[in-house]
Amino acid sequence: MEWMAWTLPTALFFLAIAVTLIGMGLLHMQYPSTPRIGILGIETMRGDRLFISLLGSAFINLAWIGLLDVPQYGALIICGLFAFCVFRWV
Image (cartoon, rainbow, N blue to C red; front, side, top):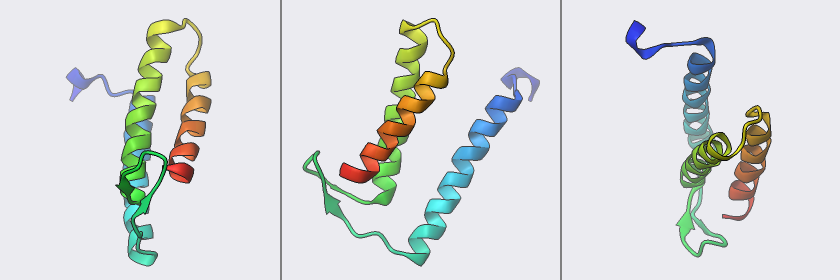
């Protein structure tokens, strides 16, 4: 798998995604999610909000890389705030 250029940050990223998905699955088994309607006006469950926050975070990071020439730590903070808002109000 040398062609994939696995680095420690890449491995940690995919490990974090896997741990998050496993954690969400366990959380759903222990405390089943109920649908709710937030500011988007659509019915979402916990997994839907996770998907929306991951997808939005990807676009935030792409915009950060494309528009700014500073370290990604700022994008990480923005992504954390975005995920909090998605889980709170969507």
